Amino acid sequence: MPRVPLKSVWRVFAKKYNLSDYQLAQFERYLQELKEWNNRIDLTAITDDQEVVELHFDDSLQISQFVDFSKMTACADIGAGGGFPGIPLNIFYPQLPFYLIEVKRKRIQFLEHVIDVLKLENAMVFTLDWRTFLRKTEFAIDLFCARASLDLEELIRMFKPACPYNDSSLAYWASRKWEPTEKVAPLVKEDWDYYVGGRNRRIILLKK
Image (cartoon, rainbow, N blue to C red; front, side):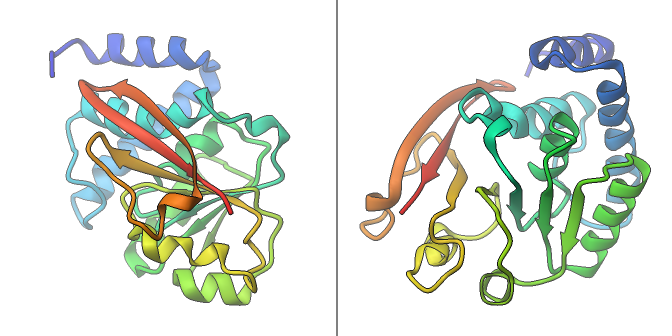
């Protein structure tokens, strides 16, 4: 990946998404916190500043080019980990509630800390595993996001008839070479290609 000054990386990123000064400052603080916490706990293998901006922040926001979030009631991030894509999306859409689903204690602590320091009033962490979340909650969630979390055949449990989320949509960040299994294929409604940080990527939208 070509090296450019970090200020230029931030400038390109902010212009691409028309970020306010406040939003850009939130992303800069997020990068700082991610690097500090990553020295203590395993949040991401990507540690270079430019790569974090491009391969985490920009990659998370790519879905905004394909999906109209203005019409949504709430979204969820499955296996939020270091907060991708939920935290970047909540910075971008601060009025939209985001449920961050995460079971690992140290990552939960990081997410709660970031929500606090970035003053994200509509981001909430849920310390439930995926199957328990599907059984024990009934929120009005329009879109679930999964980026480097669970296998798709596990994720599509949400589309079972008895599940309260079977009418919701699922966005799955995939590699260029990803192919759906026989079980997953009937649920694929959209397949969006994009290019970010020198890589070809895809977001797959699934719905019952």
